Image 1 (cartoon, rainbow, N blue to C red):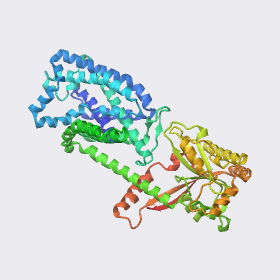
Image 2 (spheres, rainbow, N blue to C red; image 1 turned 90 degrees about the horizontal axis):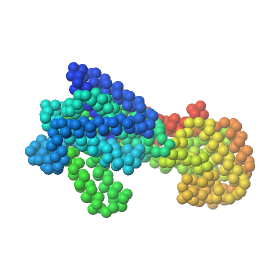
Image 3 (cartoon, rainbow, N blue to C red; image 1 turned 180 degrees about the horizontal axis):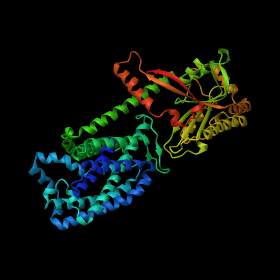
Image 4 (cartoon, helix red, strand yellow; image 1 turned 30 degrees about the vertical axis):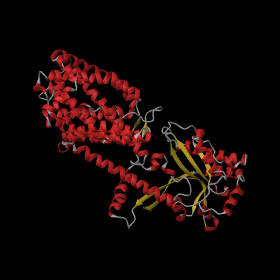
Length: 586
């Protein structure tokens, strides 16, 4: 629903602002208003790539002028048309409204909810702004300005009931109409910005949880993790916004969809707060129940009114959110099936050790970097490759990336190296820790850092025979450091089911021959480097149900073929890439 909000908010805000032109130019054709709206939307999404921080700096003066403008117009209308309107601040008039209107009053809640839309957008971007800044802005500037603007509009309507459809623009004094109209149009761009940024954040978090296909995530700030830009999502949002504006053209239909979207977001957030209060804040169950009962009952009242307008445009966000949720669920399900297959079919170290000269394995000059998500053991992709093509490089390094939530990881904390098997096999495992700003674009620099880290690891073995030093660099987390050092105390990964003789053989090689390994590493480096990665095809078993076959073979397969490839995401040069095709039957 938040993603749907990212489509409807720009469409509704910009279109309603541009329609204000008709107040002064009644003969303006509707197509021209639609064209102006589309141009503004294209400009809005074209600005996203420069980042929230820079865009916010550009828009801050606009929103301040806008708030001062509507509050000034509101004060003018209150004084000029009906000063007694200030008495409407009394809750008594809420009771009086429902007493006089009955069911019609309940129906009007679906329109009244539009008065609070936009408030949720401020709190949807806590990754971009602090809680204190949002509270200060809302209580000292935004809320008083909105109250004055609505009271002024009500004062104007009390004397001009015939201007109900365009009351906002008709209530603006003639002398300041065009300046306020320009500021209003620019302010709608600001209003759309927060929801677009929230959409980027939601998709980024879903991607981290394996609930969204791979997309290009660009971090636009060195200081704040949440400030991101996703090109593919940005342009898709723009296309959907244009389709909504051109397809419906009617602000009433879009408003119905917009109101339902926002109130559902608010209600779901309130329900999720129950879990936060109990499980995160560790408060008692009664406090959580009271919170949900008070706020949830109020939101349910608005939601019930908005649901009555599903047939009049409310179906738009429901259909869209259903499609997006299905895509997210299918991607998550397919990814879990793929990871489960890799975990259950990884090869033990003993099997790799048995693939020696006696079975015809040839070693090719050079260094092979094997990319895998498996942190221990041999990935099924590499076993599949060796089984069908009994040769691999003179030096092998299994590479696994771990992406952290810190901006950058220093070079001396980035690589963790340990040996796989005895020294004569020249096989290592390297875990690479990267911050979200550590974009690896220069493959040559990456190769140099990785090989240098392996060289330092071997040099330390040559200098002292302490087996506890098999981790080349101190990991970021001290607890993790102790665990990895304990795991690596024999200098080698222990394969599942390794017998005593195998373990004695590994210990016997400990600290021996490191000088020869250094020489072999340098010779392999001069011979060249190749990258190996799995190009898997995930398929459902023949005995699976029709639904599973449709989900895995068709939908998940389509998503995998059309999202960013892992090699592109990691910046691997195609001239040195070896992709191993393998079918996973899940």
